[in-house]
Every structure is written in structure tokens, then in C-alpha cells.
Image (tube, rainbow, N blue to C red; front, side, top):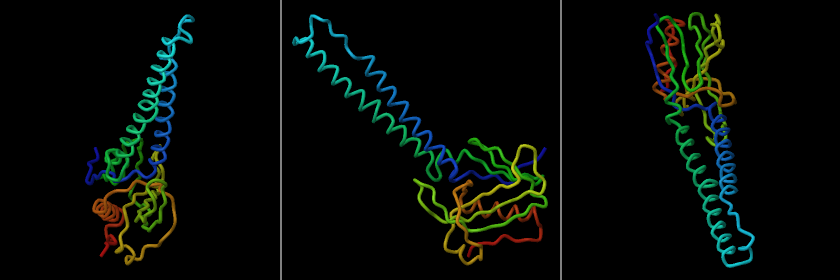
Length: 216
């Protein structure tokens, strides 16, 4: 049985931002629909004798107040709180990203799992490269990422041939000589210290004589 020799947690699930946006839309739609249903259910049935009377006017006024309360609570306050909670979980370093795990095993596998992920590649003989990537990802804004790509020569069943990980780039990365490209936010980011540890371990397994490109 393989042993995990390095395990780190995700820092940011950039691809998961699309899923977050879909869930936010679904939350608002569900709460607004619920508000309409509840308001319709609570609509009073005014007897014929009470129509046009003070009793009927009071019933309608009470319903309007209740309808406004339903609209504010179910249609605005609750979905707003749910959106804030979801956004908080998906922030950099939030609970959602921390549920994503990156493992390197003793038998030479790089694994990414958790939060809908289940990917692994073999490191033996893999092609490894690093680059800087300028990203733009909607709500999260734009930033520069340092990214490693691992392309396996032997594809495991049900797994991709390519797995990428990134971290926030800093000024020192400009001096390492990595190529700069544009791109989309299509990989998991980890903390910088974790990223450098992963790169060092990957290069040691792929080519024991190589050294990781450290930042100054």
C-alpha cells in the first residue's frame, strides 16, 4: 500500500468559482420562488359581506404588511445571508478550498482529491514544467500565478494525463526566468510554501538530480 509522503490543503479553488456562481443563482431563485409561494398561500380570503367594509380594508392592510415582511425576509435577507456564507467559504483560504487535498505518495503518484476532485498522475517519467500565468477570474479579480504542469507518460484509468497546481506569484518569481503566458483560472492554488515543497518533491521523484527553481 502506498504511503503519503507529502500532503497539503488547497488555498483557493479557482475553477470552483463557476460552481459558486451557479449555486448563488440557484439560491436566489429558490428563495424568490419560496417567497412568492408563501405570499400566495397567506393571501386572505375576504368574505363577500366584508368587501368594501372596514373589516375588509383591515384584512387587506394586514396582508400587505405580511407580504412586505415575506418579501424582505425570504426574498432579500435570507438569500443575502446565504450568499455571504457561500462567498466566505469560497474565499482564499476558506473552508471550501481547505477541503481539497494534494498528496504525493511513496510510489510516485500526484493526487488531487476532495470537493468533487479525484485526479492522479504518475510522476515516473513525467514531463514537468513551470510558468507564470496572468489570470482573470470574475469576482476574484486579476492576479499573477506561478504554476506547475505535470504531464504523465502513462495515463491511469479514469484520470487525466495532465495535472496542474498553482500559487500566488511574487516579485521574486520574475527573476527565476519562468515564461509568462495568459490563461484562465483552471487549476487549484496552494499556499506558496506548500507549492515550493510540492515542486521540490515532484522534481526529486521525476529526476533525482534536478533542483527546484527557488525564489530569491
